[in-house]
Image (tube, rainbow, N blue to C red; front, side):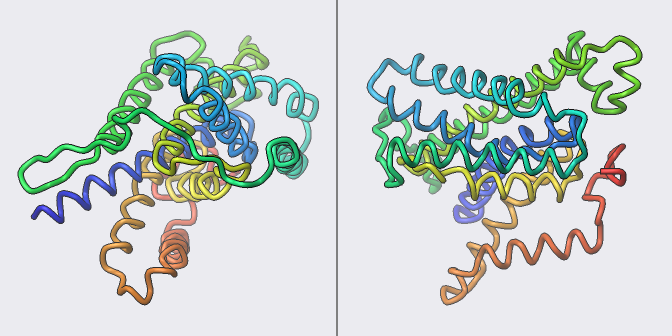
Length: 293
């Protein structure tokens, strides 16, 4: 029973991380039909901010990386994506890759490609015992943070004027513009929110790994994209469901795979994703616009 509880906590924690990444990707895709692979570099820049400020008081350590991620995300939209907003999907995708590789290579040339250890508060590595289960405080923090983010985002999208405009734009962007929705404000807000999520992901991921590298978030963002596809592109809740499912599948494989097959865990994860998409090519949750996208 203790092992089952421990594995469940691990699955929810990992799924929460994937869900946060997928949520940031889904927000941008829902409005712009843009798969922003440069989201990884926003996480990376926030991670290096955490490294630079690792010795400052914890409120600054928490909020500064998020602020940097928001500024980078909004600037990225203004400089790179706004000029090509009316282009087709392939142009937006190429632009996304170009921005991603540009930022990664700039950081590599400036700060080198070697990993750098990050000294974090002691609470990150502490744990507590409930019965026979040892629970990492970081896992609890990740789960609670994810729940707070989802509740806050849901409240924003349903109870604020800008949030309602974002939902309308995600449903039918051209019609929303004809009805008076300001495209620049809505898209900038979406990138700002994705920046907040990227900053939170950076804090969580750096806390888990204890290091930063220029390519630290590339694999994580790829898994977030996979989670978005599995859940159903075009919907933030669907992306979150996909993230949690991906985390559960990953932990289950880690538990049940024989030791000799453990190095191939990710291959089994992607095989499971292929099976899901063969059965449900539109994703687990069918949402408006998915087939068109």
